Image (cartoon, rainbow, N blue to C red; front, side, top):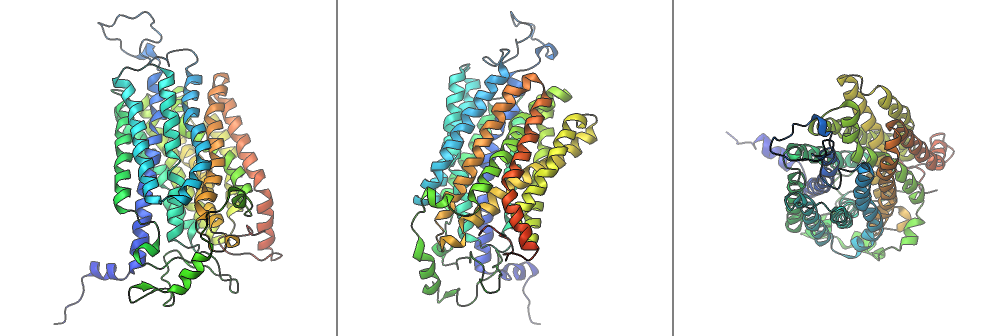
Length: 501
């Protein structure tokens, strides 16, 4: 009787060598940036432990105190201006991140991505651990924690341009919105895991809420050093096709196997496509990246979209704790629902934009829908547990969907724009410009929340709704041109519509 291959083996052999490598790189970079976000989250969980309502805490019998109101707080956050001090910590990280991001893309183009990412994750792990060690070393200096946040912010800038550049090296444009929508869930997965890990230790020893995530990201840095493959050509895989066929308007799917002309011949890559790709390999200048159509509009839109997203990232657990009167762990666990919604929103945004060819329109529609949902969440979101869960999921999807789409598929589209004529090294700089501009908003959001929240949470939500509206306005020109394309007045390319104009 003739033996047949086992079903599992048939499944494995049904995929090409190129597809296995692409899947491996997608998984590896997913883990890397999950670790980056996992290590950023603890500060938002620990805030409600650093400054608590001490009247509800059981006081140890042997504790000699002079202030019944702040005895359980961690100095210097036991003062009346504790929200301002929290804002200082947030912005020490975010301002450093925003400034460093503009330079990170430049370094990412000129340094090996494997070394660059490994160094960044190891150093980020070190500074995350140092923040947590302040608990065990009994440090009560705001300057110490602010300095750690600045250094960690600078180290974290190594992540995004490098992982997007690496994924852009491996994947073409065909179904980029969907694939990157799924891949970008690493942001929300990292936030969820960071919240859960920090929540385990926050009420007993908050220092471990930082040390454990710090060790995790340092471990992924070691993993990166030993396993990351930067380009398909390094392992004799066929490079992706980044640009659409000008005659038929079609694009290559991300996991599509190249034709025989592009595949390896006797273990070596054919030289013809390599010569085309190598015509323009010099690093692109900052001004040249800005001149790519669509970069400025999407960068400014991301500024306000990220302002909203990062205000929720840093202040949602404290808001839930103050308004719904949950303890720090419960508030942290509840806040993860916002990130669960963000995963679904990012995938949905990618699917819709792939199908319609309208990246800008997809972002704009979701931002328009987010504004009234934020208003409703503030007014009815805490009335019942079911309402809270539903509103957090919806708001998370609408807020993080555009943010996810712009930082992944749109950045990769612009970084491999046909005007660059095959210069793949531009991807890191374009990504850094877009995310760096967005990071300015990420710094402003928590800062404004810290300044406005003493006047009432209603005013914070009005600020977030205003930011959503402004984000829509910056996309209006691209939305108009996408609409012209759908009406047949202007040629359009599916998956990357109207950004050539």
